Image (cartoon, rainbow, N blue to C red; front, side, top):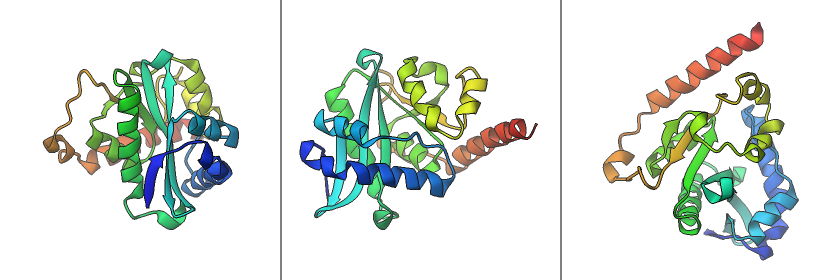
Length: 207
């Protein structure tokens, strides 16, 4: 298995990547913003993506987005092909794309919004901290990307202050990742946070 910085030669996988992301959203029943092959290709051509390959078979992918003139960056579109799931590949890809982001954008804050507990755990181990949406990018180009998410109405009716996603932020100035921090993660905390948010918004939807 290879996890490498993607380039033009990997554009042949763009369609498969988009299809895998779309199927994952359907299977999980959660909101994942849609991506187009053209957008994925642009990330590859700019050296802002990593791809996992098993020989010539697509295994996983993730890319970098920059916002506010590079003040913020996000690692987006993390996906693993169904055949390669439950093998720890997503965690490895996450580490590689995070390291690549810190190399290309050393002074940028790295942020994430996600509904997935597994992603929250990975973020926590890398040094991300839970934050309010107000601490994330205010670039509307980013938030427009949420329009294809099934929960977009939640984001709009809260004036972009919260959604089912949890905001997380790695600040290179404030954050110091240590081994001890990696072991302080408590899954019950994340589960409780997710359940509370879902309960609040589901009640609103029923009204």
